[in-house]
Image (cartoon, rainbow, N blue to C red):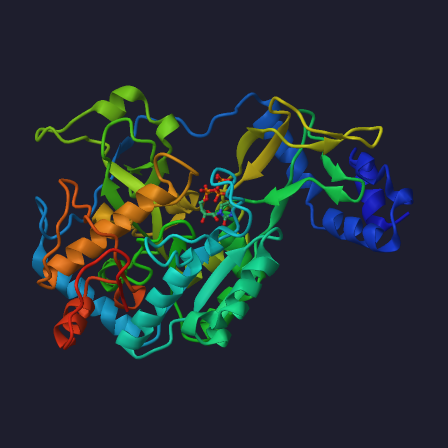
Length: 475
Ligand code: UTP
């Protein structure tokens, strides 16, 4: 009997090997490998602390919690334009010095979108349907050109989409980036378990594994060697964003400047919540620590409370855009400090599994527990956390769902509104509706894709200015 199998037997998980003798040698090796990567002590502990304690909910609001302070946009109440200009200059200097890497978490399963393939390969732009990966690649390329330094890009995948993601970049010549500056690595996996903590099999030689959450990115950055490589390359700031948001400013000099100015280990962007019940996490403070409370943990009376100006008190919505210090990632991701580990959260889900007779069962009701870490749980561990405001329309419109809110349609319309604003700022006449949506669908290349006025000067320089018509692409 193999070492790993003995270990599983001894820990009450021997059933994982119930069909072992019927497997081919390759399948046996694969099952051994999957099993060896699982920390059974961790699973046992999580079973007791999360599943069996009936403590299915994460932290509730405590007395010391207050709304988070944040740096308002220059044109908002309390905003300080000079401070933003200074921050931008600081950020630009860091970029010219090559201190910044882009980092995308793309290991999720994207079940809500229901698209067959890595989410990053999903076409999102209004006319050309450029993929999310291409949009980010071109924005990163544009920033590299502006600051005269190639900006490396780290992309976290999972076992399910790793090969397909990498193949997509290869097939598309890395969208103009240099292939040795684009680094892929896979995140960790966690097994699904039943209510007794028994690990589920997906098939005779396959454990029911799923990615360990976007919070798994911290340990994956360390385990994959990415952090070491960043250190060797003189990179100490990691610009974190999710794979589903085509409006993101992948590289934002002002944000970087504020991060540096305050000596922050982990910085975040907020947008004011659109309405009290909006389902986004909210930045809060407890003493000198920042944290994100999930919307389900924010009691209604707090969610609705307003300040003297009638604005929501707990308004700082989290949009999953962060800057990490490399050393901070190393500290948390290496797990060296017992007291600085990200907690796991529990999700009760429907998971197909192999029953004891070897038949696959697809339950109609949730039957299994999955364990995931959330990246914002790193916030309370960070020194000098800073939160800055950003304009939602220039940074955030995710593609989460197949239809309705946060779908391909809403995101495409938000891109169109942004293109219209840029075009109008460049002096082009654009007819829009009341929401700023242009009457014709046109597209501006992400190679101009920021607010530095690149698009306006390129437009100025054009001798033959095209008519704004449906399907026009400004490259
Ligand atoms: P979501 O929470 O939207 O999850 O991830 P998801 O898996 O993409 O989609 P659903 O919930 O199944 O529909 C937010 C971001 O975190 C990444 C996703 O790829 C996305 O960029 N993520 C999520 C990971 O990288 N790993 C994970 O384990 C989970």
